Length: 241
Image (tube, rainbow, N blue to C red; front, side, top):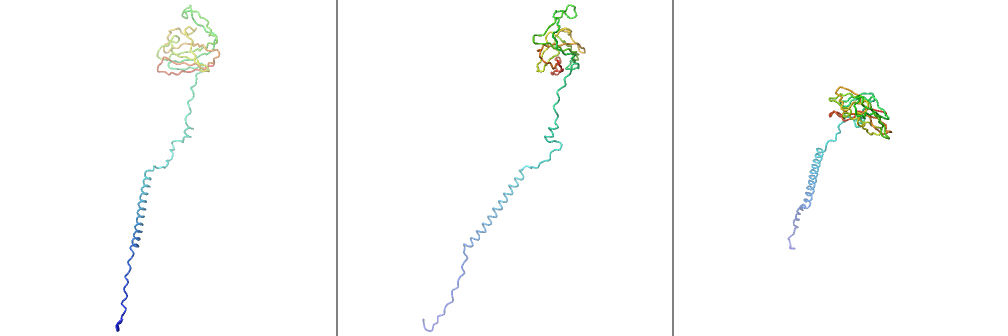
């Protein structure tokens, strides 16, 4: 210290303001950036979800159920109102006229007999030289006689005995079919062999069948085999023989 010199304290040094921390500024910006990013992600996700929903709405077929057609009945009603099967055809009876193709025929009698009369002499019926032999069925069998009245309503003549214009079957209750015996032209009362029944004419014709003695005959059927365009089905006559 020197004499006479007063030392005054100098002014206090000014304190400079402390700069803001760069770290704090950086953290604030990072938060804002993160928030913006999250919002952008949410917007993108919402847009994507909207697009998916729109696609589903367009592609999904309509499930609207249309009301049932009033004109179309439900299955139960259809089955209840469906037509029933056609009934079986009615069989003609003995004495009733039946038709098949160009043949109109009536069964006038049907019976079982113990014997039949056959002209085996070789002479024509009506010649005065013919003789008839009483013929019996084979052992264990019996004869069934079907007497008919035949009208030729076809387009050509018929040889009823020596040709095969009419297919005639006898049927029993076991559905067995029996054919007529041969040489029907020898049977007493039948047309001669090669006698032609012209269209529009009629004649008597008898068929004889050999059947087991215990057979129960229920039906006789015939069909016209001279008409190629005719039905192949038999016309049936109910019997009780």
